[in-house]
Amino acid sequence: MRKNLECTFDLGLLRRPIFAVALFVTGSLSAATPSQIWGPYFNHDEASSYTDPYRGIHRSGSDLESLIISEIERATTSLDIAVQELRLPQVARAIVRKHQAGVRVRLVFENDYNFSIADLDLGRVGPGGDHATKRIQEYVRFVDMNVDGHLSDYEISQRDAMGILKGARVPMIDDTADGSKGSPLMHHKFVVVDGSRLLVTSANFTMSDVHGDFSSPVSRGNANALLIFNDPTIVAQYHKEFDFLWGSSPGSGPRFGVHKPYRGAVRSEIAKGGTLTVQFSPTSKRLGFDASTSGLIDRSLQRAQKSVDMALFVFSEQRFSDTLQMLTKKFPLQVRVLVEPTFAFQWFSETLDMLGLSLRSPTCVRDPNNSPWSRPVRSVGTPQLEDGDFLHHKFAVIDGKTTVFGSQNWSNAANDSNDENLLVIEDEMVSQKFAIEFSRLYRDARLGAPQRLIREIKRRESMCPSADQDQSGQP
Figure 1 (cartoon, rainbow, N blue to C red):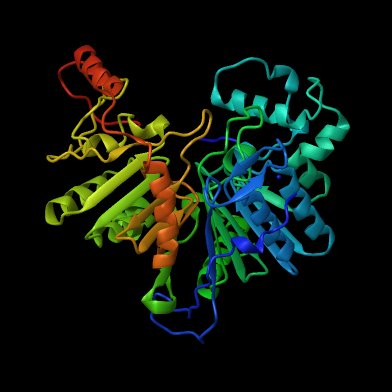
Figure 2 (cartoon, rainbow, N blue to C red):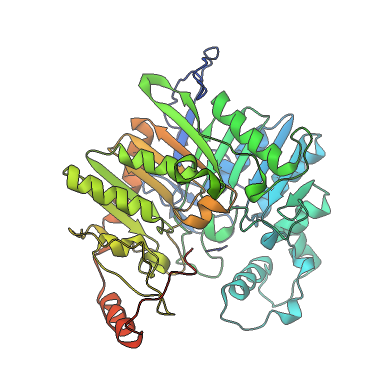
């Protein structure tokens, strides 16, 4: 789902640092280098609060935009940002300041979002119910500061983030730079500062992903998380990934999607026996599931013995459901899953398997790989968020000590087609913070199969032919 802030950085938000030494997956040990992880931070964190600088709303949560700006302001030599969408003008102005100060700035976007107000034919943006139209309408309302229905040059100069960047001639490309029509989705959300510091988040740099829908006072933003690292091994891998996108790798132009070489998992050791592991998508299907980023997720799940808590935007990878079902038969494993309501009970969602149910697609397709659990669980459902807000998280906490986190949704498309990143963090302090966020969401979640789902299953069974059709169109 593609939905759509000047604050000082609050040092009190910093969590206890984690000291580490770097270790590549090949096993060669580098020189010991002090390393830290800051965070995680959550824009719905009940222990923090801030004032939304655009709507003036004082609300609970960490100010993710302030954290992003703080990292940008650290840059002295280089600033590399890969993000699906950027609509926050204060972030744009911070980037421009660095560009004008002589810092080498490079920006990579998803081509669908590489536009400014000047690129739109606003006369054609009338009433409409489709998501793209609503998104543009919301953005126009955000830019229209005095709410008079007319966008002045001043308003555009203050609020149109992409216009601010393009007006300052900040170097930028999108996923059409490789000569294609664009990869299925350039879905990264990361910042590399001076090649030595890294910000990774599940949030796009937009109002709706950070603060909330501008035109809705009750909205508090899609639920997202953010982490900051300066582990040299992990930062180097993200920097290398950015170079693939930008085309600064030796003998190569920009490369997106499956046109990049295979990048396997790379690991870095941290204090107290913990590790950081990173891998990037997509992975060519010819290399097989185990070699992919989803394979890394699956191996992490397979190590679970006590508990798995998952907060996901999309959950449609069959292998994950099969792994969890196997583990629940082997251990007294507590599995709790929350999925964004938009996708939780779609025919392709693995929440149905966990509930012991099967739903045909609207065109009567039945997925032959579905495997409804023989012992269904009721600890599966959807969170209750404010109207307009989405569960945009992509994390899991395993046995209270391992966290899976990144831009990657738990779907086939994310693994096989999109530009994505994934981290597996084995550290109890980080996992405890994610566990608190999960508990907050789970506290008043709607669990089990809603009656509307049961009715829809019956309706589709009655309207569809008795002979099953082949699977098609699953994300």
